[in-house]
Length: 458
Image (tube, rainbow, N blue to C red; front, top):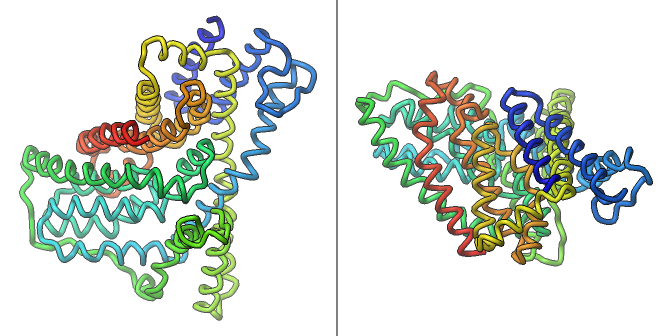
């Protein structure tokens, strides 16, 4: 009980520090280290360490041994997956391949003449593009120069179009997503199996619900705000001369890693084993070779641009991987102090069962994501608890991890301080608070449906 009370106090202090915009990596890490030291005072030396990690022999260094072992294991595995996927997405943006793919996939929108039907279709197309462009802010800004002008020209208000674009990455889908890879890791699944077997069945229905809600909600708010659709077609898409020079077949480059992972998996050619970093590095070299052919007289510039792949890998280590490890140190502290066991025992005493704990963890992630304005930070902090909770409740880890992972992205889209909402609101010159007023109902509906499907199916 003492450990659980300490954990509650530390968690409250951490929440306050994060609201003060202090670096979450250090806030979560210090919180975790404090709990680990507290746990050593409550139990024997070595009791705070992960399984198969030997003690240093003294309480003074064991918390740091825990931290070092987590850094070692995550950098070589999950860290490389996230760094390579994010680096590749960045390089696709640098060479213009993301722009080409976005133009190809959004071009059918120009054939539709119903403004609010276009909103629903645009959301689904944007969510599909998110599989290949996993950055919410990156995808949002890209769609602001492709989809947004089409919507405006068809008579949709700026707020409605901005709200739509701000939610196109609300479901972090596919092997390129850091959250999805983390969930797959803790569920002991490969990223493709997690995507195909678990994410797709839940996400397809959730996407349709969100799309329908967007249609009615944006139409309602446009009418309430007194907006009158303008079909004059004054707004045109911006396209520079350089963008027109990008080869049309570059649209396939952002899709290439996922295509390779799907082809060389148990769903197609099972004899070849391909993981995410291998697919990313292969596709990266293919892209560089195409760029060297395309810019035969500018090899230095091509290779300088390619360095963005490695540069972003380094930045991902500095921000994402450190946050994951900090979250795992904190989770280890929660488990070592007995806070997790007390929570599980309490839920079991209430008779909630696996469904109850899944809903509770999903709500916890959702509230934290809204407050922090991030989908990654809360999921990184709490995801490592899921396998332990699942084992105690005798349910599969993926049944808890899937709704937690999807809820983090959905809830993030209701926060007026999250990166993508701030970015697209700034580009549209509207208030992020007005935007999240329009995203709240579609995201709430999506969260309810997603959680219910996850509980029913898994």
